[in-house]
Image (cartoon, rainbow, N blue to C red; front, side, top):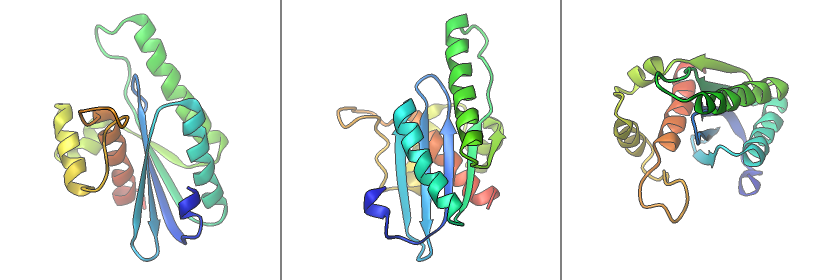
Length: 165
């Protein structure tokens, strides 16, 4: 956020995919229409640091809205996998609540319908690339393939901009 400190933001939209490895996208919008996108892997330290920036902006009067994907355990998923998912989901909600960042739980069917995405994860990647062509969707610089979690988090941030603003 340091390179963005001097910008005058009018709104910030957060999208969170709390899945197994999870992702968070933050869409910063300035008065001049400039969009800054920040993608983070789901890691407690990085997640908290970015949300603290969002909290600071919210306290300064910037409009802030977040969307967290509202999904449950998957049929056939092991108990440890379900527990890990629930842990990420609860961590995200608790953190947003503690920081005073307003959020809405949105079912995948609802936000995916907005973008005509199917259950095929590649459709989310394709739509995200079309809407945000300059954004790198790779989880790490060494990755060869785009990450569907990043794409979905980014689309949820865009859903928040479109539907919750």
